[in-house]
Image (cartoon, rainbow, N blue to C red; front, top):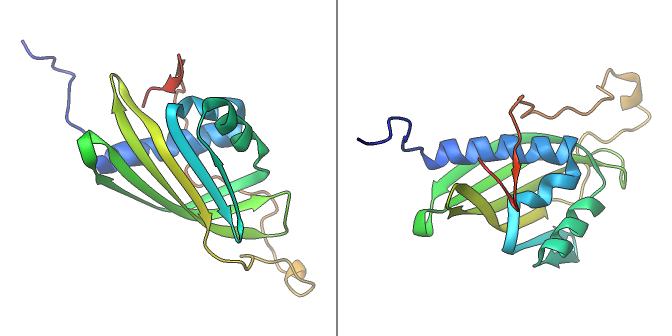
Length: 169
């Protein structure tokens, strides 16, 4: 008899669930974000002319921990079924950082490769899309009511389970 709980999920469902999990862990338990990756993974972070890349678990962890993001707002999530059962996920949004005043727009692209139970991040590309700050604080805008606490738009209470070197999602 077939497993009654086994259900086919769409790329959109996988991508949406992954993004909720990933950014929640990134905001709340950054020490664990590298568990979404494995030894085959690679990532690149691009900010203007500066590019940083990592291709092993230690470097991926170090790069993730070095990011000084204090807030993340997700604007869009687009997912597409891809090669060999993988899922391509493109995320747009804004981040706030201790390194600059205001919010900056970004695009982040993930390739989620299938594994025995779920997926892992095989490739991760993060790129700031412009050089200007979004929601800049100026003398004129300080008088306006602007939320001082950044929000995580995808804040969803989801259980996070760390199993070996990967998250199950």
